[in-house]
Length: 378
Image (cartoon, rainbow, N blue to C red; front, side, top):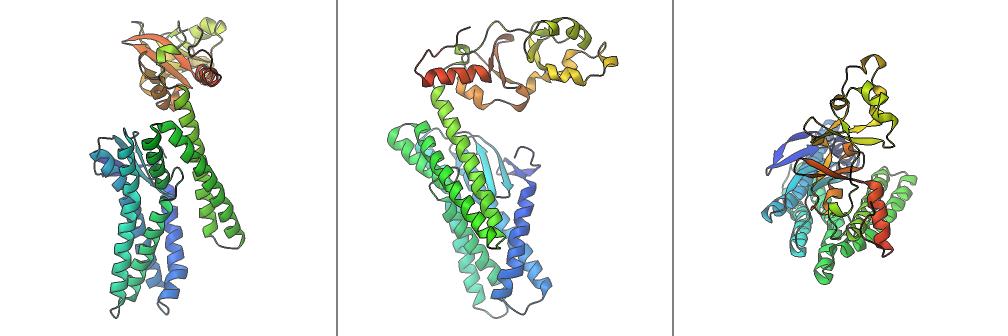
């Protein structure tokens, strides 16, 4: 969801809306205007159904935003940094740091579903009350639909499986009982994979029977399976890397190249000797400045290789993953950026002291799982 455009800020947190959120508005609006409202309030004009459906879908989108804002509000009140709130085709997502304690994790997790249940109850009650008066049948029907949608949303999110809020509630409870965050994450991740499989199968059956809603259910199930699997892998990785520092794993010394060299100078010299596909570059003062992917050099036209310098082609240090030797390795891995080529540069002050690759980490995890040496042989 990193490519979702930011539309502003809410509660001081950047708000993003992914294009799939517009698809969600269309699908729910279409279902409300073409089936629900004509059944509940017959003999109205198509224009009235369309306008009411659009309003209802937008209100649902706002209620999804309220759900995510509840997470963000509680997290910030508890001192947890919140990076952004994103609305998309399966509802919403609030990206934040991990809670420091199980009690905090419980409060953050439960705040969203409780908000949905409160909004749902209020909308349902308002709709029933409004429907008792003459001439308000259409607005009342929209509010009743909105109420039930939020109640279902709240109940669905309380299912005890990752990445749903109910899974996070169970995770917080297991964490509190066992004192082991990663073990709790593994457990709810496994339940999330099972739930996702069930939802995907159920959605496929519904779709084969001609209901378009089965497509959304299948998509939701597949998404839950993918995220739950990723959570289990992250928990396993955190367990394997527990307590290790970046300096325990890094390779040193590091093969480098000068960032001021031209592409032609590099191809005729260091490129003929290196067996690396990615090299850190150093500036005139010996400080790391960028990360060069050798595949990037092939895109430089032959006629420009005499003038283009390596730093003009390489990924700037600001877009690379860096850490200090004493930083926890698990934190460095979590911060791994797309432009880093799977490398983590270990920097002590302004000096490059080592490099960590995904192969180093994989080998380390395998050794720890086998009960072998925790440190990498250099």
